[in-house]
Image (cartoon, rainbow, N blue to C red; front, top):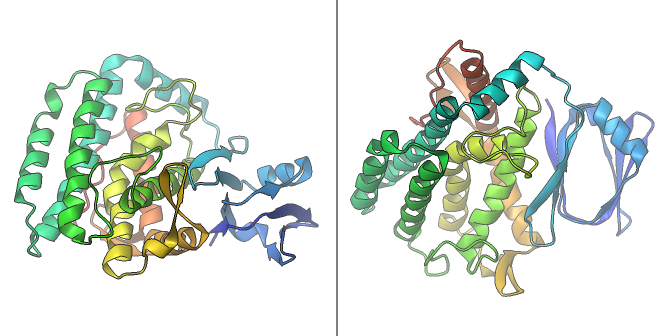
Length: 331
């Protein structure tokens, strides 16, 4: 089974015979058996050459790069190896025809809101005062059919996320991790920093799964296809943010696995330092590998596999085989 590799130190990535070799700036060395590598996430500076890129392309290994503050900045996305002219045409058709695009855009927002509501109900059943937020989500869900453009849907979704993030103060009840308001660039407090970093990891993880399908990541439906290189991964990530990123944050804060020692203040913002990023990545990977009972196929699957299954459902929708229904977390 292939793994995601996270490199935090500066170094050089090389090809050595038929495998990968990473040499850190501090002199430590590590072989990375390429057949077992799904993708590599670089948080430090890395040097690599054309030879290693050709090798990674042959082996279908993606590289994801993050800047000094932990923000995702881009990927090395090898030449598509599951090309399907038919599916690309259908994907473009569904983007260019407003009614077809709206159907998918609405389902991505519906999936996000349903899963936000599922998380809120989970904590409400455990005594947290979240009835108002749950009611507001229901109101947003009921109003989705009235929204007639992707921009209008994104506005509704934005309001829903604001209310959801405000509910973090109820769920966490931790003075060190108060939401106050959602801030991104820069994140102005520790909770905002966790959300931004978690979302970056999820965007990259979804992109890696898209690579294993016939879908083209450049054509999204909720997020406009424009000069941004990838947009489909942003669409699909909306559905999984509440059940993956939020739950990782709740686990870290509630179990006191992360504290102010894991953050540094820079350029007017508060960012996870290297120690903090390692703590978050460890919990994120643990979540992605954990399994849940998925009623649709009647067996347990990992969260990473759930993302792939969601992509297959989108493929079937584009091909006219089955109308797309977003994942609803029922566990």
